Length: 278
Image 1 (tube, one colour):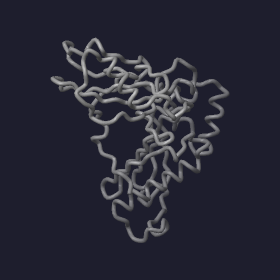
Image 2: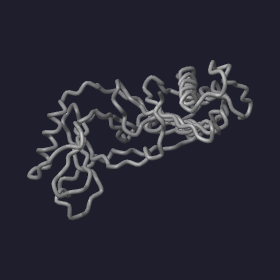
Image 3: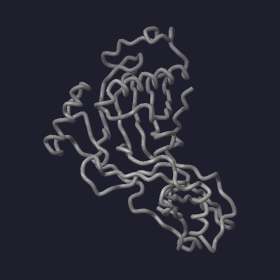
Image 4: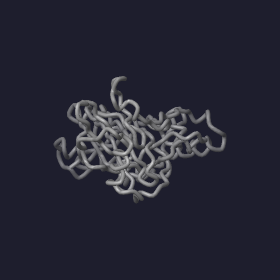
């Protein structure tokens, strides 16, 4: 079963503190204010560019990719940081619907009569995954790294798809692929914080050691407990590099301490290799 995409998932209950600090919005008089840290590269913003803004050789290669997809350069925006497609405007039949040139049928997809919502979600994801796989070279997206969430609206006239990126089973914070299917046609596709990830996903530091690092950092204050056990995430960071090299990544333990007398929700990140508080 494909999990449904909820609009509530767009809201984050806590703000990530750099690789090991308390980076949350909190009152100025908070006793933990002096413990707050935040790596300047966290939460990197995309740098949107059009193909004609790029170096000629790079632009020519991207135009060839778009040509294979049946698109022109005006149908695309890129994220210069990761060289991923930030936005692609398409008109490609994906599931049966009344969209332009859409002649697909549910029977042709092996689903018989009009399917119920769960079957429609499953079909939309499988068809989208197949599209990503067919054009993997041009899109530079590995569908095996995506954990899907699909939401069907208006009896299937609108379908929203999101694939959260995972590498070796570890989530990449804020990274993924989003798509919109309107009247059966894939009309919009885009990536977020998508770039090459080159790091070891086997931590050198244990989760318990990461917790100890946080405890040492916040002393003399002591956590009364933790919302959850320390979990691994891959954190994208901004890098001052050229086209396609504007993201770097850290494997981090996310620690969620709670403190007596404070209602704020804290989150800390500890580099899982170096122990650095990001």
